[in-house]
Image (cartoon, rainbow, N blue to C red; front, side):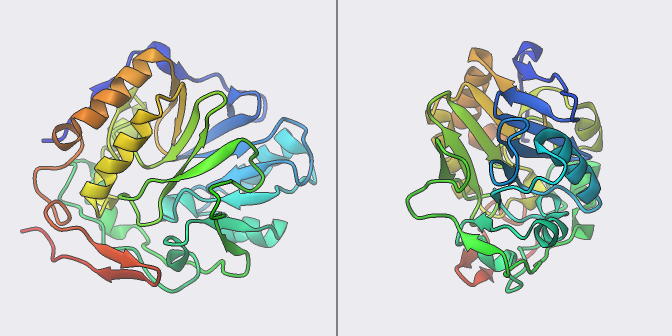
Length: 298
């Protein structure tokens, strides 16, 4: 059975700023929106064109994101871009409304584009894994696609991140085909989306309490465990000082790194469910979207 890796609470970065976000560096803050995190890159007061929104929350969070952005960057401020770790429903909830308001580019990996331009739905979730309420309810979650093709662009091939100087994007597939993370070597800051998380996302209790733990990607929405393992190994090898995840609290320091290395080295034992739809056979995707889905687990 998959397990968690406890992390010392002293690793948690959790001081809320006046705009409702959690600053983690002078130019980076994250915000918890019900069950998911988004992030804002840019110095407070930066003004239009000098900040970036990273992911776009769950449905119904448009006004919350807009209020925080206005407080942080200026009343009429627009970002340079919106960049996406991936396109699952809990990361794109306000995306179309914000894009229509701001009229700015949306960047994602080329393998993620079919789920954001109306061409393909994600593979079905697997409610048999994880054992919690969030997992059991997963068949009810939207699988897309949405269509924001008017604003959609592929991330640059040189691995730069538009509007985020100093960061590079890193392919971290597994949880979705075109999942990416964002890495700044200068201060060893890592924004990982759902490549791994710091709470038990399968459990409603875990989502509510946010106990500091390291987990693999949310089980019920991960269709390729082999790729997910390689992605965690790649991120752990960077030896980050700060991690901001899509679910759970941001963490920093040597104890966090110890836990992350342990997650990578014991991934099969700690993160992968014993049985499940995608455990023995992954879903397959190409540039057109989902092309193969294995049968449901028995």
